[in-house]
Image (cartoon, rainbow, N blue to C red; front, top):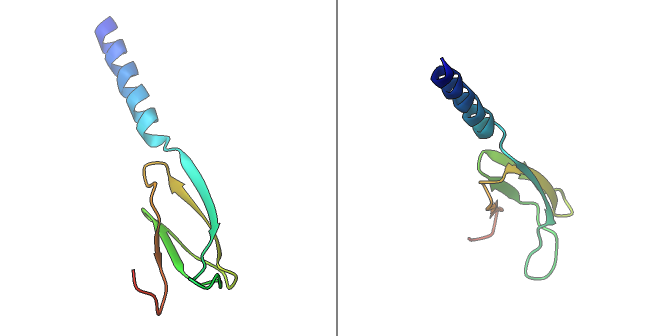
Length: 77
């Protein structure tokens, strides 16, 4: 009986640990080589946003998706 309770408790702890992904909010400004703002798409994992006309963006991502991908019309990566 104690083994079953311990097993269920361990499974519950693992489920809670995997479900509670830590979110990070990243804020920034996209600018070109002349320091002019760029309206760009910003992607991290499954999250995606578009920078505003001033190049500003805010995106909330999971801690494991710790990289951003930027894309904009007329620019090459």
